Amino acid sequence: MTERRVKVWDLPTRLFHWGLVVALAGSWWTAENDDLETHILFGYAALALVIFRLVWGVVGSETARFSAFVRGPGAAIAHLRELAAPGPLHRHAGHNALGAYAVLLLLALVLVQTVTGLFSSGGDIFLVAGPLNDLVDTATEGWMETVHEVTFDLILIASAVHVAAILLYAVAKRLDLIGPMMTGSARLPESEAAPRLASPVFGLLLMAGAAGLVWLLSLRG
Image (cartoon, rainbow, N blue to C red; front, side, top):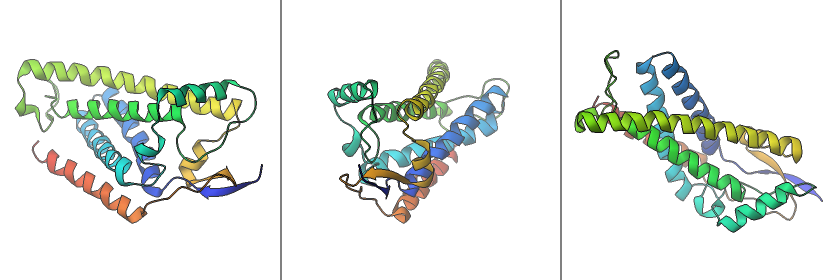
């Protein structure tokens, strides 16, 4: 089958992806080393990235829009069958039907994790509290901190599954998922239409706007 190299991921989507990797890794490291001040900064970054991605999933490039890649359970089951069958996978632009659910799950988990962190007190050791801590009572604060911790454990599990899936695609199906997310380009069949990509400048402005909103929120702290 004749293939050609096609641009499938825009710059803002790729910056979101790798920025979230850095933010989550930094959140884990600072939590493990009791550096809450820096931990909160990584949390702000993750929240800004998720806000951007939710908006970009509505107004962004075709491969980033939820309406383009989120399909019903039947499509996910069909993809699992294709994955289990011998031979190569059909190459197409964007997320597959199964990966779409992984995207939604991770976005939901990070959103819950970052929002609950806004209500943290910092405990008896740290001097920095979340900017919305004064809006809740002690009982609610404790409940949110528990949800915050449990959700991050779920994020670590989801991330491990994500990495395992990438390795599975690479080894079993010879399908590189990392390269396209780094360069933006992938090889697609000639019959596969190139996706419509939104302006990267527009995406970067939205990303800056999301960061500005979170910065304004941080001023309450």
